[in-house]
Length: 89
Image 1: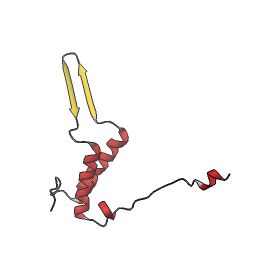
Image 2: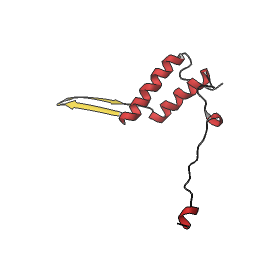
Image 3: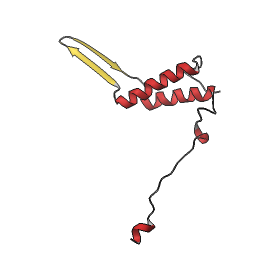
Image 4: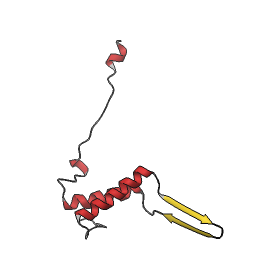
């Protein structure tokens, strides 16, 4: 069995964290810095946001693979533009 950072977390806790990650992605911010004179503070996320999302999804998949499929279970969609109508307008 693969190592899980969230092995003791419930599905509800993971969904709360997943929501936080998704909100962070929507905001587009990962680094926060502030300073005033000689005093400054800095917060930096140590793991890539996509990696955090994947780790949470893997933990959810371990709890419920039907609801949270990963890998070959995921549907893949391919969109292409038809070229035949461009050649014969």
